[in-house]
Image (cartoon, rainbow over all chains, first blue to last red):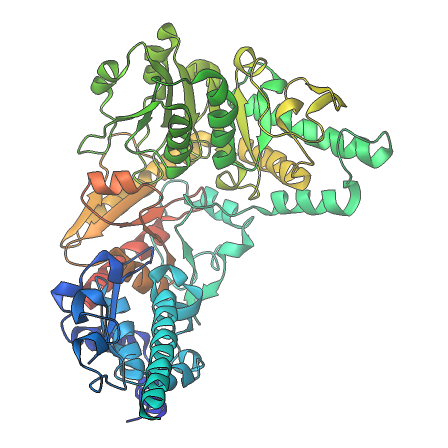
Length: 173
Length: 424
């Protein structure tokens, strides 16, 4: 499913729940269904700064990730030249139930997608889902920072992918 | 008077003590009579963050802007004289409010934070040296802790901490051992913003005075709840903000004993604070102007003056009695919720109640109460060391104002109960 299809599905899903209690129950349930966050990534460096609750975000994927977990940034030094995945894989978590549910929604939209796809997601899905107050106004919960962080990862990995592609082209000439 | 719209949306409640008095008060706060998130009545319980302003305060500011605005102290024309009169009238009202001996002992600031920073800079730079010690308390707001920490870092001084007991009171028995001949300053809050604890600042000052230790009392949370008398407390500095006293944001005051402040170096340089300026050197103005560089928040001062007048006109014994009954009702109601733990159970508290619920993040409670119209504050309340002391990252906090009703406390208890059920 593309991110656009996912957003349409989520919008329909939330539109079918008019009652605020049920909406929150649904958000909380989505959070509970989020895959367990790998404990080895529960480190300060993966913490997204937020005032009210703690949010962790790890970005990696085959041939991606950082020095700690993948050997090198692009994996090439370890001979993994051709195994870099196209998509970015995220792991995320929060100690607050509602924030975790909102993270689960973000993961449905952004996880395991290419940098281009991530950067191409129109930000108005926030309004369409009726999540404005959580993602934009209330920046203290760290979610706005998390979205920004997802975009920064996409920009950084997008550039690394570009350079790698250019290097391969130069080599094959 | 129409009281039916005051608590619109709630089941009728038994008319408790002072209910009529509070209902009448609420008519002066139109902001409270509204619905949020579509259609739920607002229950504003974030008064420790900021209080709402009654119509007379808003009108005073508007009237000033419509009819009297000018810069103060500088011009000899009619508007300048009227603005100056209003500005200085508020100064004398603050003096009376705190029972300060002299009007020039009242310095206008942007609020509590700037007042503390002024003392840490101006007094601190003159008086704290390498090896000296400054005492703050474990329940102080970051606005007290951080400027004092910065002062100590600048001077090579040591910051020492007066601990908090399990019930949320200061461990005053530990204070004599913390004090030594290097102690220069004790800074402590009068009332804890996170716990509501009323601290025995008079005893602290009584310990400090004979030892020549300077005292700074952070009155941000006290002024709207307690009768403050700086001569009775016998402190050297007392600071507060207007916006926690039904006045405007961006204005507050520093009371400092003239004896200390008359020899203090200036805080900021600029207009008003000088006597004469030449490139060879500048001589400084007298108190209080020496510490009021630049154009002040004049309409803020006018609003503060109106807030003091309005607040002074309340029946404070009725207000205090009502506040304590709200606190009792909230304490009883919230305590009945399974897994809920109140942080701070001091015998003397203002109408602040801070709590956590086992296995549930305070931010989730905040979000779900907000959906039900109940405005709480969730977080560390700018008291991270205190949160650490109680082993929590954050709490949810409800704080009452003079206009808070019993039915609003019931709405609080109901909304927290519902939030906990939804999150369990």
